[in-house]
Length: 227
Image 1 (cartoon, one colour):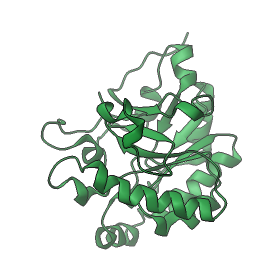
Image 2 (cartoon, one colour):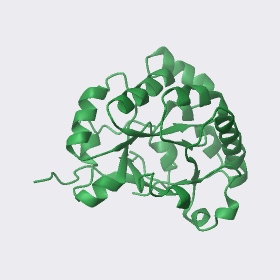
Image 3 (cartoon, one colour):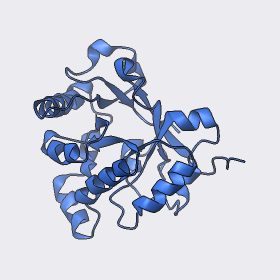
């Protein structure tokens, strides 16, 4: 009998009409520890949740069909994350996709350096992405700007998603104009390096219904999380 979901989860739906057969329907992460009306969930997810070692498998859906359509977001910079052990758990649960969500790349460069000094680093994230691929998982790689494209492509993910940095949420959810600039830069850099997979950008439900508003070079949206 399949264990039911025990942890509160956040659902990041994916909208990419031309790649729906390739991509998962959504990415599931642990729910942020602070209410969304106080801190944007994209930022709150970067804060400790206290879920413990079973928090990941606890958000895996109990329904087999839903489980097969969802990917799982993992904090891959965690120095205590055992890729082999987590991969075994996720395979037993029927999960096929993983993502480095949340990502330390969402932090400003200065703070990211401080995280690296204590072992919470971007290099570890990319290495974990590559290791999950070697163990048979498909991966949605999260990044924030074109400077990280070479690192991400070295892990050979099946799809990428561009998220704004934490500072971009200071005045609320950043406009598509602001998000689109970074997304276009990443998409162009990836294509120049031979990338042919789907490129997603963080978006809203309203934007999902209007593909003409999507940035040039972007194939779809990773929608804002809902609990």
